[in-house]
Amino acid sequence: MGESKQGVAIAEGLFTWPAADPCLIGSKCRQCGEVKFPQQSSCSKCCSEEVEQLPLARRGTLWTWTIQAFPPKSPPYAGVNTADEFVPFGVGYVELPGQVCVESRLTVNDPAVLRIGMAMELVIEPFCIDKQGNEVVSFAFRPLEDRAASVEKSK
Amino acid sequence: MTDVAIIGIGIHPFGRTPGMTGYQQGIVAVRRALEDAGIEWRDIQFAYGGSHDGGNADTMVDKLGLTGIQFINVANGCATGGSSLISAVNAIRSGQYDIGMVVGFDSHPRGAFAFDTKAWGLGNWYGKVGLGLTTQFFAMKIRRYMDEHGISDDALVRVAMKAYRNGARNPNAWRREEMSYEQIAGSQMLNPPLRKFMFCSPSEGGAALVVCNAARAKQYSANKPVRIAASILRSRRYGSFEVFSPSQPIQQADSPTVQASKAAYESAGIGPGDVDIAQVQDTESGAEIMHMAENHLCAHGEQEKWLREGVTQIDGRLPINTDGGCIANGEPIGASGLRQVYEVCLQLRGAAGARQVAGNPKVGYCQVYGAPGISAVQILAL
Image (cartoon, rainbow over all chains, first blue to last red):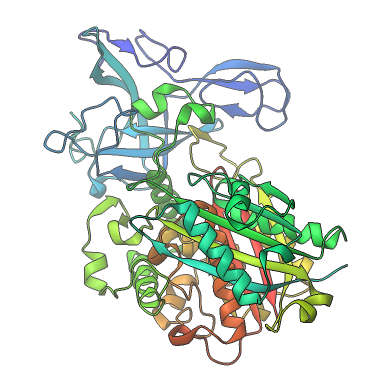
């Protein structure tokens, strides 16, 4: 993925970038241990403001999913959404063990390969080109198992 | 505690009414509620009203009459109507007033609801990458629920089929044509497992209620008073799975509906077995399925069997969404919750015409649910 050109991250502080082994950046409450993504300066559970950054696990399991089969409106959508060029994409929540479930795009869009409980891994991949012509990268999760069957159609 | 009753009901048909604003539809609903109760605007001592996109309810006094009453605007998302009703009930229970008006109306642009994720405290990236669509959330929530409770796509189709069938019997509904199983099951896939004809759409409409101190109901109106046995709103607790959540705790909590429902049964002093007819939030087919159980009307996982056996049809043991629900009426946010109450009052009065539930229903249940994780429950009884 990120080995060719290093794009610009879609937002600061979402994931470590550039990095050889990028991970999402969450926050963990020093009082109650609750984990949140993206990182925030207070805890939604116990209201404490003593929180610290926490690198999130790169692997987890699919908690739920759907496919975005129709083009989202722009704005806010920054990807290609014209009727002829839009490519449906997967969306899901991935449970990172002992941490939190994170919402993410998925690299596959075929309902046949997605099932709750399957192993997933974080990837940083090109998403769009910004107004300055830079390649913008964002995060997604890909199925770990049976990669051959998991046809990557999201490109 | 002072009992509160509904003695007048009014509605402007839901859907699209070219040449009429949502605001005007709200005024129509108020006039019809007054007419139904047999009273005049000058008899009204206070009002609560709300609209998401349709305008300021309190400015209606200019059209209805500047009688100087306390008119308070309510803005509480999808629970706006429910919240107005709760406020009115409390105003009467407190002894401050005897009779008041509750009104909700709206008019939304076509297509899925657009939300500014920034206004929700979320980063711009969230919408940019194609997350944060409400339809995605509904799909992911029901996908997880179906997986946990062994429910198949068949149940989703049957909920929608029932909605259109009931809508066809309701002159105030938007979608008034029945749809076949195949039409629904073959409609465009939007966010699997949810297809086009399983979703409700934003629409227009208005609904209004005249509420009063139940002890004085007879002196105000000849109508059979419908008692408000419970009127409850709850917001989400930590761990409830709600829309616009970039992350979600692993440990799940009960939804606000479960909390509101428990409190409502307790407040009414009845149990789910006493309910004769129910209206639950059916933003899409999956929501009705989850809400059947979250409102304790059936056990989790029992829904598929119920739907196949027709338990929730108008002629079934526990009719649900007898007016076609949100799927057949669309969702004008401010009016949606009051539409449910309107329908239950009509049914309890025995005046629901072609969709009247047989056996003289005596207890009706209403529940609305929406962003950002709120649920309002009303229990009505004769």
